[in-house]
Image (cartoon, rainbow, N blue to C red; front, side, top):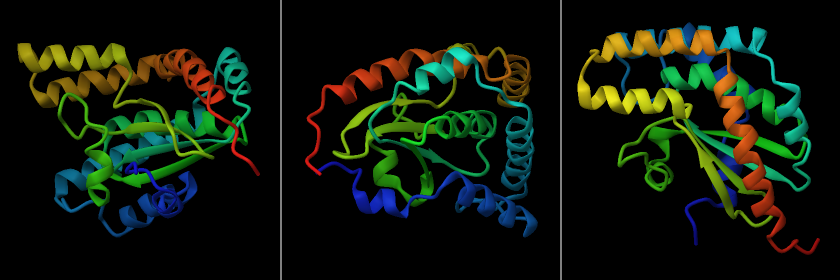
Length: 211
């Protein structure tokens, strides 16, 4: 039996519930997860601001909307995240907009530090990087694929910088968020345009569940 169960999906939050949780915790000067330091709360505040920004100004391309419309069987997108995650602040609003574009896509969110077994099934280079989106066939709970923790172009730069140490962690973080601001969600949309086709194909090859 896989780690993704119906019970886990039933417990996962909707995007609206996640955003309400983030806002409530921020009002209390807190964030999600066990690390309640001033630095993590500050990261969460920045992430919240970025989510609000992209929720307001982020737009999906017509080409991507057309591709999303091709999903013709119920699909669940389970995102592993945390409120303080900088990359999540930049990408979750676009993922939400994509899911909103087709009623057959059900977006759910789970907190990384509350779901270690789930997280450990979807590591990135051995690390618990987030956000990670897992695409699941809703009927069979078959995993169709995953995306994350950030668009490939900036992920390659992130990994190269880890080796070269050309920029400090803080410097690279500043560079990366400037990149996101200029990119305006174009890279994540380009990637979903491609991987959605793969997920749809995989889903259509699965046996249709009897009603």
